[in-house]
Length: 163
Image 1 (cartoon, helix red, strand yellow):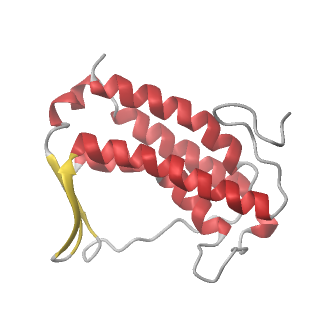
Image 2: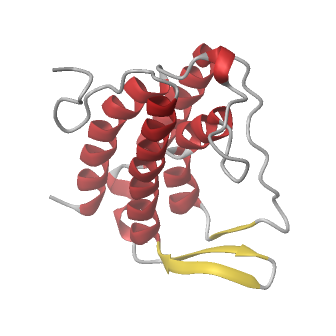
């Protein structure tokens, strides 16, 4: 199996779990945050929802420079808009996980803010990091949901709320 097929298989599997987590975010709690240094649940949800589109960015560009392209998250107002944004981002990322891009996976992709370089790694590693970020932030969302007493859906097995 080539790397692109492996990434696609993993993205599809994680999308099922991610969708279940995002749909649990209540619109009326969008401004809630567990700590002043933490993101709001809306900001966290938007970040999770947009992460599949980073696959497109990694495969079709050579860098992201925040000094040229400042980060501007979508201004979503409801859980339904959040889920639609995730589906759009997922379709976008999936559409580039084709055999045509296998040959670019070893090219270097850079994340920077002007002269400050955060990472410069092969595009395959950026895709792997993106998939890991989805899981990482989804786990963070699980803590937010638990603190709000919202049942956690099953992920890789049943959750404590789904026995």
